[in-house]
Length: 469
Image 1: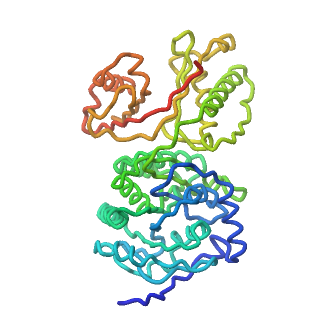
Image 2 (image 1 turned 90 degrees about the vertical axis):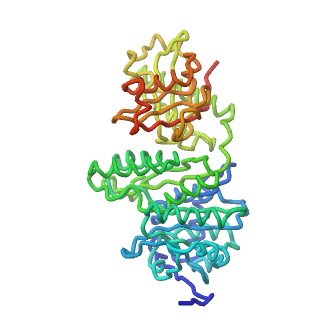
Image 3 (image 1 turned 45 degrees about the vertical axis):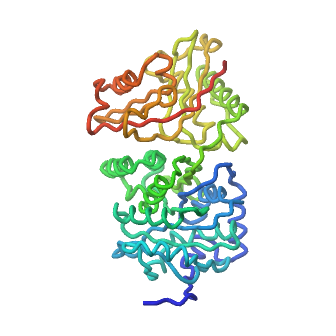
């Protein structure tokens, strides 16, 4: 069937997910964007949530703010299918425009045709878009950032490997040579209690950041098998998320950053017993710049004050940091030494909170909860030295030859056990690659050759390491 170029998709959730009044909508979006920091690194793809703005708008804004001032010439929004249970393919809306209370957004018909040229499973099926909200709720943010916006909406039905690969390949081909942004629309866990949601979501986020499709599949299967009360899914936009990961791998957007995490209980009207998780994640072709010297000094001060207060039995200091770099969620370790000897080291593999609070939290664990050592005493406080390691996301190791001593740390997952060694450890111990591989197995309580097991998963990571000396 042929469709006229005047075909317009009308808003389906204005007045429900976001304000229907244009003035109120513009004011709300502008306020949310103004409250989010903007970082130097340019995104090639984003994951943003699609719930009602009162619940997830502040998280979405952290993603969309990264697009401000960047003249993209191609914009694709990937949505997920909540309302058409019998649609299993991929629909590229190829003609006309989409309307929100802020006006119409024309379709980039040339780009849409380039995607459709890939053939099945990519088709133009307008009816599956009409009541679906996952693309619509992202558009007011884009309209405020790009007044002359043209875009292509893509609805993913079944998140099968065949669909994901076909769409990622079509995107990579159609967007080659263009300054493009691919936006994947997805919420995270639905509807466990708050404490369970944070566990589940942070595991899923860690898998997304690794760009490892197998780890994401394993993470989803493992958590769903636990039958956590209320947990219906780890992510409703699994298709968009997997496609963003595959597109990033194909196009060299290998630097992943969690910009913001929250769930619906973090807002005043949210319930703790029935939550939905939200994340804004950036995929980029360039890494974030290193921490500034001032930020490093701040983190070391946070670590020292946290340990001092905890060991003395005092409440931890309230943290208020203005540096955007310290507001990013990051995984980190804090190492304590005394007289050149290890006194405690604890940390987190996945980002759980902003970097400032993460350092505060793991510094206390290093002092009081490293099972290899007794808790730090008040008498020891003046003699402690502090080192902080801020971790990059994990990356799967396809070939042990790619491990570089002095650059890479290692994480292993095998036999239900895990172990981690920081990049500085093999340098301090004088290990070569083989010794490092044996040591990571022993750290996990595994045989020293467990890294060779077919089921073993080995990951590497880098770290920005700094101390007081």
